[in-house]
Image (cartoon, rainbow, N blue to C red; front, top):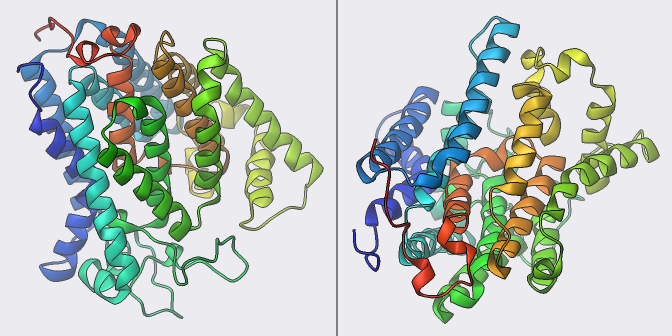
Amino acid sequence: MPAEQIDYRIVWLTLLAVGYNALLAIFNAHVAGIGFSAVAASEIVILAACVLVLLRSGLTPDSANTLWFCCGFLGLALLVSLLNEKIFVDAFRNALIITIFVCLGRRINFKTLDRTVLVCSIVVLGFLILELSSLTTYAGFFRPAQYFFATRGTEEFELDDSGLFRNALGFAGRFSFGIFDGPRTSSIFLEQVSAANYAGVLCVFLLALWPHLGKWSRLIHASTAILIIVSNNTRTTSILFLVSVMGYWIYPRLPKYLNVLLAPAIICMGVVVYLANPYAAGDDLVGRIAHTGQIIVKMGFAEYAGMRISELGKLMDSGYPYVIYSSTVLGLILHWLYVCFIVPQHTPEQRRCAYGLAVYTFMNLLIGGTAIFSIKVSAVLWLLVGFMSAPQRNSVLSTHSFAPVSGTVKP
């Protein structure tokens, strides 16, 4: 494919990864009921189609590091399955999504990445505006509560008949900007956490490529992120947005790979917050951080060795313990090092991307469990990371440096 041509296969596959839950919800609401198997099968089909694109186009020569990352998690999945005497591939599935989209990102040009994220943001913004302007229409079209009951078994809230996912409804006393009344927004993601995380992904995208985006792209992405933040009332992404604004000027001035200290510092902070507030509980920021710190403090050898996957259900709001329980402490170390070193830090754009990726990942792991690994948001993030980590991005970015890697390794 010519260097200047947009690869629309990537555009449509990424958009499908972002919005496949919405398509399934429409089918469930208006055609026929579905279950979890339909969700799993849809994700498998999307990933298989992405692999087919990679195999037809050829892997780039620099794909070895991310393939070894995937192989490492495959080995850990086998280990955890043996220790628990049951097949368990959650952590490997997360690593596979990362690997596939990083490899895709390394073979695309800037126009393809720009068009892909722009299309995703336009769709997200469009459904967000629909949700804010006519909640009844939005809920009737997707029927999120019905969909998540059918696919996850999440019961509808008995005191609410809006048809929305119960976790989007919020509660009295929860943090709010006070700008929009009503439930926390979800847009095409149908649930509020993924919408908030998409705004976080846009922060990383804008950090990395702001000077190279057109004015309309900047406006759409920034408007989407800000509207999600103020209507979703997301605390973590609000902080991330402010950090990103300051980081745009600060990150290029920081030493290379100093981001490797971020995860240990955040884990220590979680433990300190718990020790200082051992009885903190609830859905405020201190309570969420202390909850993760408490789990970390109380973990023993069996947890660090991945022998307690039966207890994963209690870790949906605790990311670091979730990664350890599902892939052993080695999995956490592998993920930590991959996030910190996957993007070379030779240019200001790469430095911003690398630090933005680390802040987004390690902040979320302190107060969230599985949300950042969802293909709905990770597809866009890791496509960006793959693009920024390609070898030709190691010099000052220009129009010419946005061309795909020359030469591929055919399978």
